[in-house]
Length: 101
Image (tube, rainbow, N blue to C red; front, top):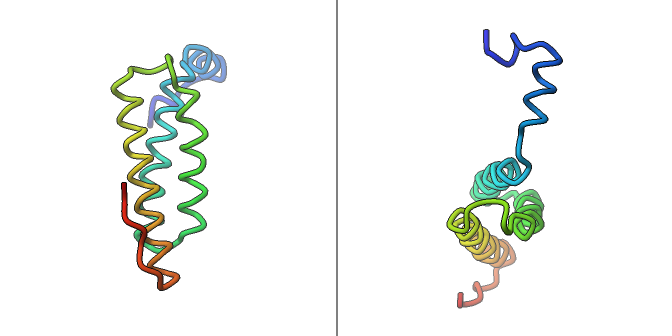
């Protein structure tokens, strides 16, 4: 059995109280990035867009709450996702993609 399933409700509550929100949000954003790349790969553009928008909402909240390098990495991932989304959207509409900056 996993440690989580062996924990009492009081132990779980204590673990939640110790959890820092900044690193948790970073982990959530990283999971959303993986999900967004997967959705782009399977051409599920509305789902990819939702994940990308959610990451874009989370990133500014991380200022001063995680290491600067981790935040820069997430910002770069977000930029890559936006570019990949633009290319996928253009390809699905039959238009040539806009040149990237």
